[in-house]
Length: 320
Image 1: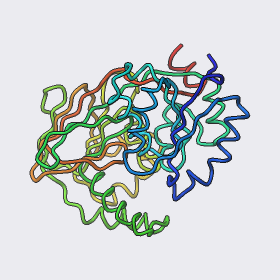
Image 2 (image 1 turned 120 degrees about the horizontal axis):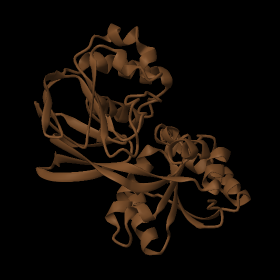
Image 3 (image 1 turned 90 degrees about the vertical axis):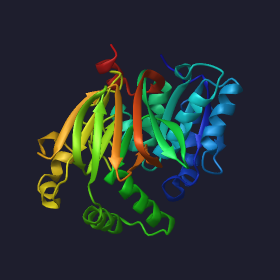
Image 4 (image 1 turned 120 degrees about the vertical axis):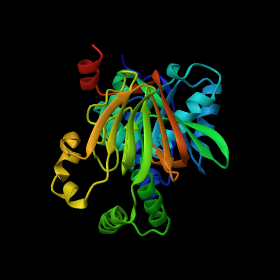
């Protein structure tokens, strides 16, 4: 089961979590050596570089890749696995040492965000085939698509991400400012008229505040937006948030973190293999924390499409 003696291609995002990717890598490198994990590290230099590096790595014969960074770096690597033409994507084992916001994905598989535990999980080598989503959207008057491993957000989620990204670029992103950004934009954002189809059946037609759909449970800062999601069932889980007053969330805030989101009366649950969203006016979509284009949007699940490292506890509970 162990993969310690395999050669791993390590893609490091040096600017992850305000530079901790670079600052913490000497420690991560030492932990990998101590675990007898043979690593060949390379640092990303620009946006989408991780995608290019993934394609090159697979072409060079690597079949084991470690991501050191956040969910954005993971997103680029996952897309690289599907761009490359050497082998099916699931023949490459993917692991992550989370730096920054990437912990939302790894926590779905019981993988610790502590570096030493993440390295131990890699050395133990327990793996799992998870589903991957494909998002199709309009951008620059062309139909485009992107793969994602965690969660997609439509409406308020994408709107908020755009505003937060603007603050991050200005280095104005402390905890208090982040909270104030969420609060202020909650009141600024206007719900949009949406039609939503799940497996060709229209499940909603009206004003919608936000839609989350995806493979795994967690998004944002540990919010369980999709608490019933199963990462290998071949289906998206959806949380449909109808127009909602702030105090309805304020007094039920715990439900966002303890898996009780569907106890909030304005949140509906759906599940399906294909999803289509039309809106007026257009709404944008974000996947795995990356802003993409606008509606009309289509999503489809690729069942058990990538092999990922998981904790032994998750493996024993879900796989055996």
